[in-house]
Length: 75
Image (tube, rainbow, N blue to C red; front, side):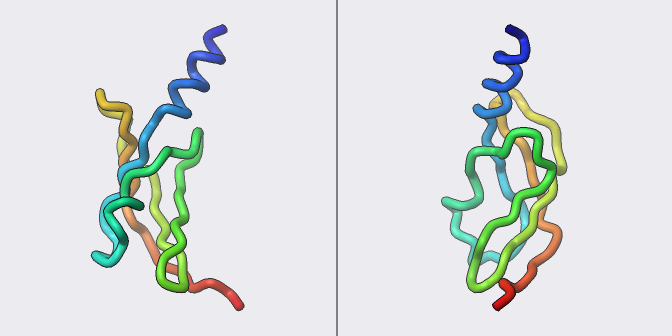
């Protein structure tokens, strides 16, 4: 039963993306956090913005991810 509670808690988290290009829409900077993932990849302007988990969960169930790099989409 505790596993179910832990899973639900992870699914309820919100990723807050910090850094990266200023053109990244604010709507993309807050999104459901992938459970257990330390990295998030966001498609943006013909490439991907990469973010890595940087902080603990705060009291509002937010997880901070900071921008680390940009890669281009392979064609």
